[in-house]
Image (tube, rainbow, N blue to C red; front, side, top):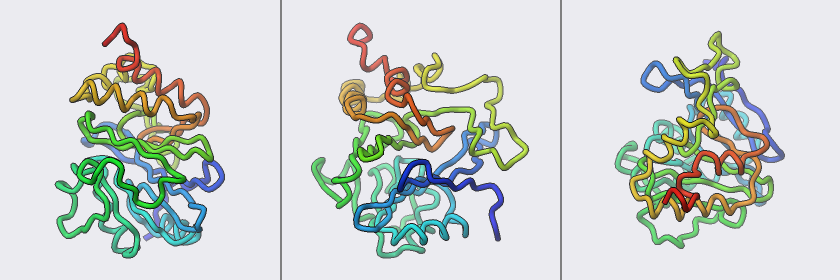
Length: 245
């Protein structure tokens, strides 16, 4: 059955997003998004966070053979099985926390937080990785230097999710909130509360802050096309400001 809600677009050369409605707890319109990157060898790396509907699969097949299926944190695992079934030769890589929650029949080819920290899976020359061991959802941030793009799941939200709800009758607005953007005081509180290990958070927040990006592709909310670095600094200033240590 065709899906009339998914928005598929090339955000920048070689990076495609698959954006659609998603409501947390039935009331919170956060939106959902998968992201695919065309690799230099002709293959495709995909952060698989939304359903593999016919439109999504058709575009992925057009882009090239899927070589990597990525879960970005403990909670974005619902569609890994259907991606792996469609692309059985692709490497499936996820944080350790995902493995405990995902379909038990899945075999993972790489596990952040379980494999040695310097383990390479084959895409690191083009996509850098920072595993946030001190974040509650055990998120992984990804950096594509060639396009100046950072990709992440629950580390940073940019709501309302207007693109993800653009094919629905909803505005994608968050109930009782005008917005949930990186510069908001609420996002700062969220970032601080989600840190289980403050020392690890400071280390990993700084690693991302040192990357040279201007665009952020979040799973939840609109893509930040410019000013992404400042958005990251705003959202995580509590871990970067020595006065707040």
